[in-house]
Length: 398
Ligand SMILES: *Cc1c(COP(=O)(O)O)cnc(C)c1O
Image (cartoon, rainbow, N blue to C red):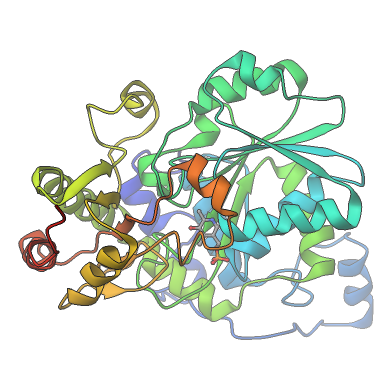
């Protein structure tokens, strides 16, 4: 972590901004502007030539966005950050920057649905192929690396089954072949897991989730080496153009200030609910990164600070029972997305993972009885009361 501030709780509030530079404004000012006036034609020439620092046009840089980028870079412990208009804009900018026609990407088994869709499109259009691996051992990864592999792309915890991948191990194998490792860190946020410190090269966030934290922004962030991100900024970001709006950057700066406080509460609530859910007779299986009885516990202890706010569980019943359970909830909202103040519940097989072919869903453990919960910031007792009354109403199968 950190440039100026040693603790993440301080860095989320102060890093990248000093009110002294902005007329004493405590809150970061919102520079809601598309362009910047030059003092002279010659100054414009110098800025375009890269001979003088300064803003040109907001697709190329904006002072509010710059504060956010500096802050997230510090939180993830990277050299530079870049902000995008969505998590997918960030993911596509990075994957396109790292590949050319006929290259190969090695991925974790289980990817965000649209990332999977993007890779399918890249295969169709540019013959960029991908393989999927559980990444449980070095040998398993080595066996799938080819001369044309230019990127290893990992999500951990894997959505929605919460399986963990050992990032230090993946990074060590990738170093042997000098292949960059990209990690989608959306589920953990830099408060719980920092992949760059484990040897990975690029971190991506859907900032829509825990970083924004209030369910009112769609945005993406990338952190990595300055040289790589300078390249992304001047190519796939500038020329494809998936930039963030200054206002959304402003909302993320505001959201980030409470990230550690919110994450601790998400984790506290999830731990309480995990213990209760696992004991309920209608819950057949439960997946939570903080489960000390999980086979992934050693990886968890190594790379995550706490278990996060995401729990998936299988009910003892059918798809219709799962839907019935969701419909019986009183205040828990049926919605995709995650990391919001509100507790959200969704059905992966028919919602977030409906695009995954049924056979692959089966392999990933995404059954019709699986339900995913994004534990919110409400009192855990209230969330449990709602879940319990719905579970208790489920039909008994004999
Ligand atoms: C939501 C999400 C994305 C996509 O981000 P958007 O902001 O919706 O574009 C990517 N990866 C993960 C793990 C996500 O949860």
